[in-house]
Image 1 (cartoon, rainbow, N blue to C red):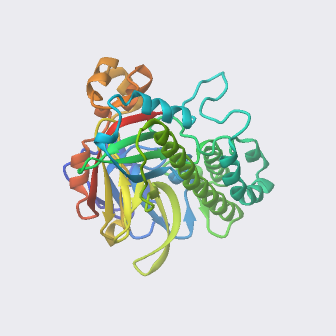
Image 2 (cartoon, one colour):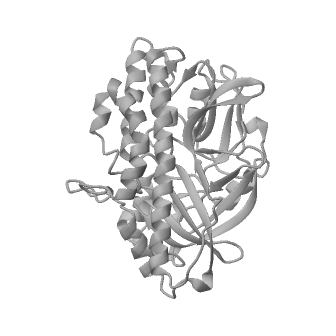
Image 3 (cartoon, rainbow, N blue to C red):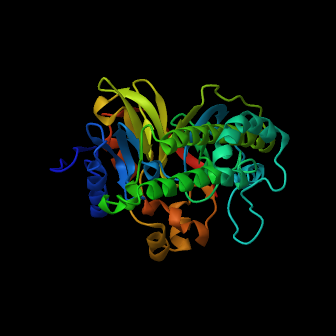
Length: 399
């Protein structure tokens, strides 16, 4: 679609439903004067905070913190093993339990956070945290409130919501480990603080914005530079968080599976909620991928389906019009509240009959029917990526 009072919006959504509220939100974002050339909209697009999820927002001279969001650096990691399906135990319940014990996950309001390491993180987590401390210390000098976050004890932990760890099989029945998480509590705190700062900085002009969550920092301002530093650090934290978790998953699997195995050293580890400088159409641009994956020519990425559906390891085709991007998943078709209203535990049990996973009221909002058809999503972006491997889940750990 093309706007009369904003930049064009280019959409890869043929055969995929797009809600009207999402279309209106796209129009609002496209009206921002610093958007470069056009918005690129992925087939998993749906309503988000300020800007739609599943959108690539290229900008020059400004950055929108809410477009990056509060799950900064959220993304995927996948690793192929030398195991085959026949090497897995007949009952996968023990393997799921081993992974759940190895990686803190979940949330329990009013009690000790089960999704953190508790009073002390393990030694291997401490060693990784040491590499992140210098950058974090610089950020906390200006923003001391961030020092009070559970940054250290969340490193190497999963989180909640749509974050997950899976054991999958590809088209040749080779076993893969795959996980989805981001920068956890500290990333949330960084995102929240800078979203609020952007709104405060624009308090005299915020009424003129299409949405207050489109408040932005102009390049050259103090908060712009501080945000770029903080968001870059959070993205590195998220990357390392996934590495620590993957090592824990592999260790748990070695203990639970009665066969030695190796792991492909070329694991894929990619963000899908982030911002970075890139060069497109001959210009240096800040590219915000809000629920989108970099798909430079030859670059590997991961597009997960919902629990109970397929996932894909893909190779980018370097499509310039999409700013070399692809979708980050299937995309929701309804809110979590609506999913819980519409479906039952019995529905969840039926939809995930082939997967060893939790099947209770707390995960109904993640039921496969709350997401778009992943096959339709993949067909809509055939000009953006090619499929390298198709994965199907056999174990799924939810936060």
